Image (cartoon, rainbow, N blue to C red):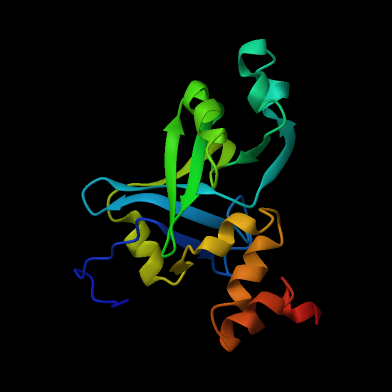
Length: 184
């Protein structure tokens, strides 16, 4: 990635791993799947590794959604946390795709398709035009490809370190460093 201010950065379908310097708030050790990104509109993504204690059945107790009852709800980001949305992950040999903002009825249909992983999210992560590019230039995020393995991994607090370790030896050191390096 070039650091030139006007060089285009295209990150649709990429993972953003929070740099260890983002120690406060919701993005601490977060893994964000960036499903939309362009210079004009900004970016939209979902945090993958912040499961809540709730399931869809806790929030949508209607029999209409019974097939989704046991799906754990994840905190997708700081924006719109009062809204529950569904997403469907699918993979090809080369990449993982994420279809976001699908209604519950479509989530039920897609959950019956082989190779599809349905997730429920409260909230999302969003950046206005130019905001994410600025954060990338300040090294707040580490971008990496979302590969097929992502769907078989636990999407919990350990996901960040596991993905970071796989990038390079330098990133392995970052993943294994304590949050407060002065306490070491």
